[in-house]
Length: 555
Ligand code: GLU
Image (cartoon, rainbow, N blue to C red; front, side, top):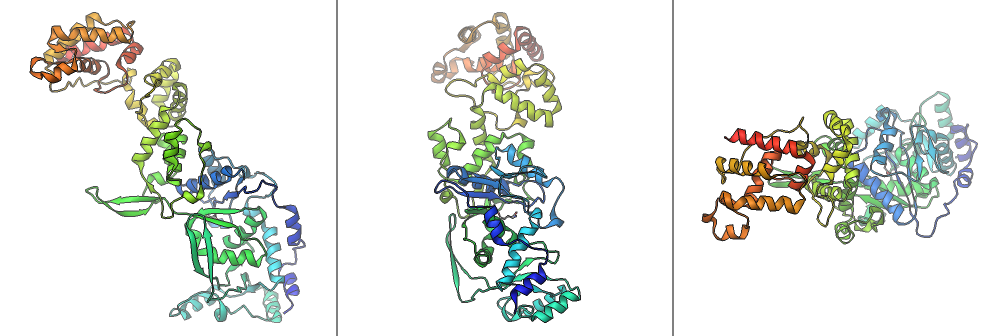
């Protein structure tokens, strides 16, 4: 067979050679050990948590080695593409602080010297390498129709190994004349790999996450170019990862089964095989109706709202919290590091691919909440204010107007209990803010005046009446508390909690009960941040009004 003739017959328009691209995209001048990784999504919808996780891992891997992380858009399957898919991915990543060093930066623009970074703009490159494979006898045109392939599947029903390979590959050994006739007749063709694989041979890959994996070598004559001349994912990614000089392929482990094909492709093209790190999917515990754990399954785009990245923005988790949580899922030593470095930036964490779970980390919303409370507790009041305001602007018009109306007041609210050694850890996400701080805003404030069972309504009334006489919003914390203590004895309570515990019969309650009644009167809650600060912010008049209101309710 005259391979050169066949190559020219199939790709008459291609005048470049692989050398041209090798020179155009030279090896990257990076320090020893620097890793080049990528995130290579299809623009088929919006970012999912699994994608964000993979992008985080790939980006961290590059960062930790002073390498390059880039974004490549894999859009060879036009049917699955959605409008705005590329910008959705870019802005989704950006929201979580992931800004690739190079790659696609908008629907139509690239940054970096190794582009275009969108596969549909690389047609000529793929066809150049496809032509080279034909020249080298490693690829051939296949004229099999859908029907012929369906018939083949039927014939193979009883076979242990099915597919287009070996003796089953009808077009593998067509003569040049036969091919010429078919082409002249305008028959559509795909380009297939002429696999050199040996069914008896095993390949071993040493995956950074999964360790050593042994698999049978590929024998399939897989499709490289579809009938429309567009490459398959397998072929396109191989050419791209080579020319973009990826060193480490970090991706979901659904691709593990394809690795033998990929390795054969890299080798057939004369490329160096990259290193692999296959990420296990994020898992979720399944529970029965009684809440007992019955097993685990993959986090599902269909069943779990939290699988979609937009969920986190909607309920108002700061991106920092999600990032921090993803790192706990990614590296088991992250939490220890965080405890030892409570205020360090995430970038300082020494991320390690080898510390990733091979079986899939378990997603746990309660844990995310906990982490988020910690993350938010480290924010300044001003930062909380700005974040809540931005969130409310999009998701809660009422809260937005309340916060925007008096920024100074709102910042002071968020300032309560924020400084000091033990900042309050109460808010996990911005959609909790409104209910949590409702008592600061007359428009939101509601009070059901429910008092604890151990306090009689007339005692509560007496506390409030006595307190109304002495409350002064100008009092500092000590004076404020001293006044509450002074109320105790005359009303039959004790200012001393210990004393109460030793002799509970002797008192109606202790100072905590007294301040508890005041708290309910002022906020409608049994639990709040520092009450003295709350009252100071509400002001004398409003505090008196609320106390009077409760007295009236109780009498
Ligand atoms: N486009 C592929 C996907 O979205 C990327 C796989 C890879 O990273 O190689 O699953």
